[in-house]
Image 1 (cartoon, rainbow, N blue to C red):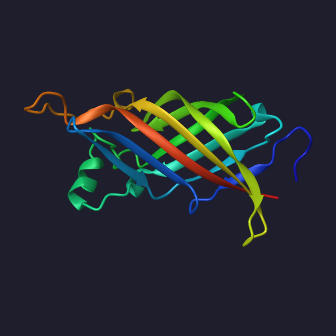
Image 2 (image 1 turned 45 degrees about the horizontal axis):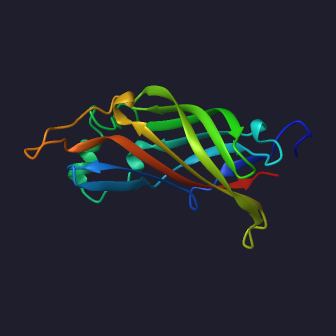
Length: 182
């Protein structure tokens, strides 16, 4: 139950939510993958977006790669550092409405043990009652671009053709389904 001064609480549905990222690869392609695991909670009130908030965590080892050598390499300290920093986290600090369905969600993102401020450009996709559970669900899409060096993800190498093996900018895309807890 919520009072008039608090927004309803929602949990992130990990089955119907996704976190994907992409970055330039070898100066001519794009490497794209996702994380298979995500958990967190939201407070969400479409009538008062500023009262909304989110906290989420992603296990680094849930990265979806099919190559064991690449998986091991991604856990190294100069890439995602999953051995020393097994979880990435996000905690919102402010929600600013742009219009009725678009919000800027500002917060603190921690990757590789480094915390930096970020802004998620978020679209509220809607709410509905699930025909299977009878619970109210809400969906959101959010995007941001981060510089991987800001988070200590530093490995790279020069290519013979010029440029570098990995791009510096990482595009992050989330689709989040929250389940209202009441």
